[in-house]
Amino acid sequence: MKNGESLSVFVDESSLRNSAHGTLKCIACHTNFSKTQHPVRAFNSKREYTLINTELCKKCHPDASSQYEKSIHYDLFKSGNPQAPHCVDCHGNAHSLARTKPDKTIGLTLCNKCHRELNSSYEASVHNKARLQGKKDAPVCSSCHNAHNIESTKMTTKIKEGCFKCHKDMGKVHNKWLKNPPITLSTFATAHFDVVSCAACHSIEAKRGIYLTLYSRKTGKPVTEEELLKILETDPVGLMKKIDSNADGIIEAREIWDFFSLLYKKGVTSIFMGKMDVGNAAEAHMIGGKAEATKDCVKCHQPGAEFFQDIFITIQKADGKRSLLRAKPGVLNSVYTILPVSKFYALGSTNIKLFDILFIIALIGGIAVPIGHISLRIITLPLRSLRRMGKGGKK
Image (cartoon, rainbow, N blue to C red; front, side, top):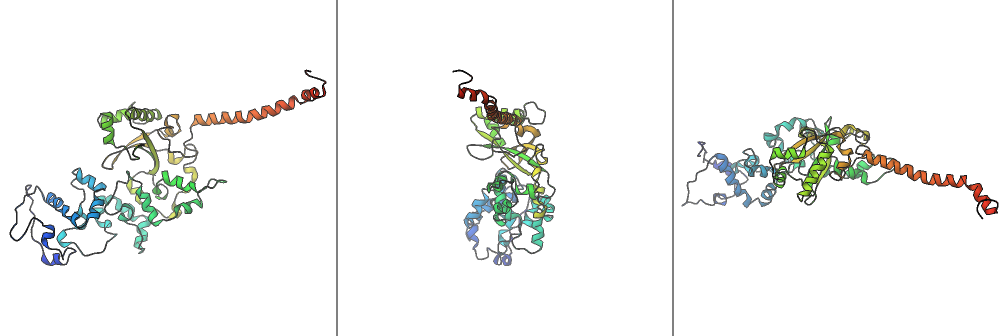
């Protein structure tokens, strides 16, 4: 290799014949070689050699390859990340690929190569306890994240779909207790599922927060930082100045409106999609039993609610990472966020005080008119009676 590395070209015949590729001829993969042609090739590194040859996997595994090319792993690979996993990183050397059925536990060892910091939180979860008890449907990495088309958890809603693979009819289950007496609607559970992650209620001792992520109304997808830099013709530092205009490190409701308006002037119709979620990936994996889940409505549905104290503006990046900017807790109670955050509302905790005052005034006015009318009729009853008898009033 040009970088000084050495690559052995020895292939153990016994391992190859007993591998999943044992029935293939050499030229099935090594198409440029034959008994008479054996070109000498040069590569910069063993990694480069491996990645070039993994293109051969597409010939027999087009579906898996197509799924992989839609994944966050492939995005990292295209960006030049040397740690981005490709075929052989998970499946091993093509010459000794084991003959095995799909192994759903493969992620417990292979995913941990890059995501080892999440292992302890998964091990503490009810999911791992179920796995250790031998339950065949106990979820592991690929159960929620899929095997090949892995997406950034911050750029997709498919994690919730992963939960529903095993936990079916959750709408009916939650509607048994998720009520607002005396009103009971089947939409209560769905409304929660749309804006609250499963982990937000089911993760043990997680730190919850409200995350307002900038989306395009046109595409329905997050507007990435890279797109914003292009739209606003600025750099990352300049972008932060446009969002946090007073540079105090805390985003106020007026600043949200100003940024929303700025994008509109640039031809971008946007919206901040609100979601309650846990603070980090470790907490997302630390799922407890259903008896430990949060069921206290006042955690969210009252002024100054506990779960509404940490609010963040989220700007996604193309690689799935995100920038978090802390916002003032009261931003959701301001008239400035009515349009920018129009699709996020929590009864009791996102009430707008001005609207509450106007509602009270309207309510008082609505009550005062009929009461005044009735009172006036009572007061003038004697006069109206005399008038009807011709003994008083105008003739």
